[in-house]
Length: 470
Image (tube, rainbow, N blue to C red; front, side, top):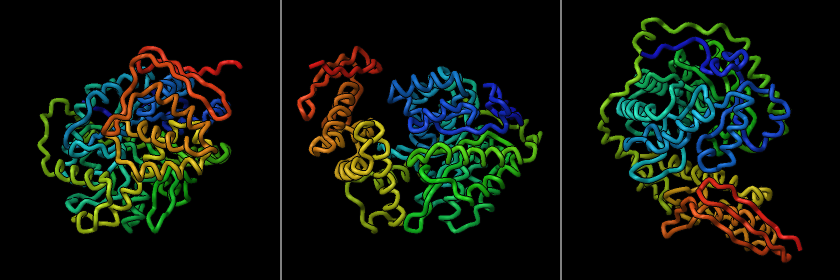
């Protein structure tokens, strides 16, 4: 039986005032500021996949777990995939949670794979009972690999509407919460984006959600592009989103709230102001209501549910994946019954996401911010998506192209050498794989300098850069 406590899932980690806890996503761009002012937040969130792909990021997460409670946030488990979840990825997520002594873990009600294809971005599900049943089945499978901590499920932003939607948005998430026994990580920014883009009142939409099942909240900024509102995580939180947060808290009472910021970082004082606003809203919220006894007594986590047959969902996910990652943009006639404008928008988001994922793997080249972003956009547009480790494959392509530019070559050569020390490829299909064997290689930089990269045995071995003295 699952009994929900009116206290925060962060309470076990000892966060002060856990129900009113305010956190932020831990990112390299703000790491120094956070470490200099650790009291600015009560907890932090790390992207689980970043810890999987970067040993340095994982060591960093383990280190900061001594300062704050750390919440691993998954983005690639694909809990909505009709084909099931990647159990190896679930086991790695479970190992990370144990390593960090995580008080809670979160993932999205979305799919990132369909028909054997990797989409590479969180894609919202059709609002159907079939999809809710698939999520419940996949959650049950994933929970076997996770420690006994709350798994929170996040609502997704929609860039593509499904013609077979049978439920309203809030009703769909109520079905998901009821069938999985999991509470929700309510992304208020995503609710606002979905409401604005659908032309409905954001307050009415959020009230349709099962707000008594909200255990944590995400909030982020966004922007309009060509009449469409994107929850970008790269802009200040707008006043209407703060207003929507206040309306949610009036019904949920105080719950942990996390500010998401992934790009275009302002001076830390601006983020501190946003965190202060969030904290004020949390403290002004009424006491958290107790869950209805009848519902709390009936909640169960289904761990023995047999695999659900979902042929319709499998077919539509395969079709969506095909449309979104096809090398050549499909014609309006080819995308039916989906809207051509929505498919084109979703494809553009995926291209941008590929660049956003690749550039952090090229830290020296990324210091040439605008030039690197333009080059990255050209590279991913001209290259099909690699079936595995796409960000690494894209980063290698971008670095190789940058070596032809005299302004970018010195940084690109070093970044590419470091990636080659850790990965093998690309293969014929464009994929790369972790390098298990030792690596030693040198490169000559413009101007005659020589630099070596040395790695020991194993995919997680450290890579050292050595520049011999002249």
